[in-house]
Length: 274
Image 1 (cartoon, rainbow, N blue to C red):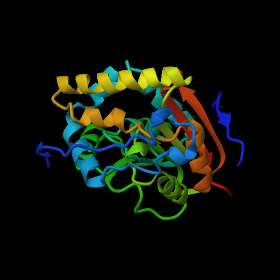
Image 2: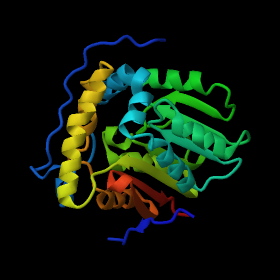
Image 3: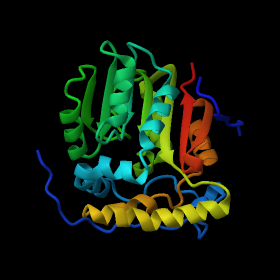
Image 4: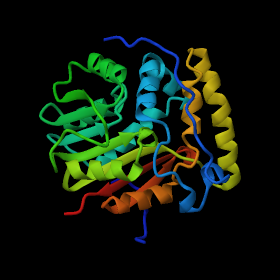
């Protein structure tokens, strides 16, 4: 059992190079805690090529920085995402925006050697690191690919996941539709993503701290620019209740969500209708 989910009431080495400044517009002046769904971005405003180049650049330090900035809690959140998929031994899962493969590897352990897990990421350097790190897991493979255009058949997997990658997609609803397409009827689509805590005053305080701290930590590893993008990507990003509505519009049912880390992270899941 997942527990504490809120049910939605239906309504080769990569060479470093200078990266372009990644623009984010504040949503109608309301910031990341905007309460009006009309003020929420439908997708990432940054071109996919820029996002891929940025993640290629930070790939060597990505895991270390995640551990530092989450105080080591990211492993606990990934375990919650694995549980939310409800997959068992022999199941198949696709993990989108897989990065260096940590969630995909956790899923591979869950499904065992007779299961199948495919990790997909737009950044070749991330995929290269993931392949090197988990080459001994026979049930796990990694592909360079676009989460909005997956090279898989309808209903090919028992579940689909995306962790801290939805914010990078050009169209959030299209991302959920594509995940639902490749999952069999009755299977789960799971999204683990950053969020803005409640109440509003704490959300604003958290976002201010995150916006200032992330570039400083990134700067220690020579990646300040990339870690200015990460907190900025929360600008106008849907709050958990709005993201749940997006999942329903994408055709998912039994949509629910759970807040983690005092609301700084949200875990959503929805079922592909039978």
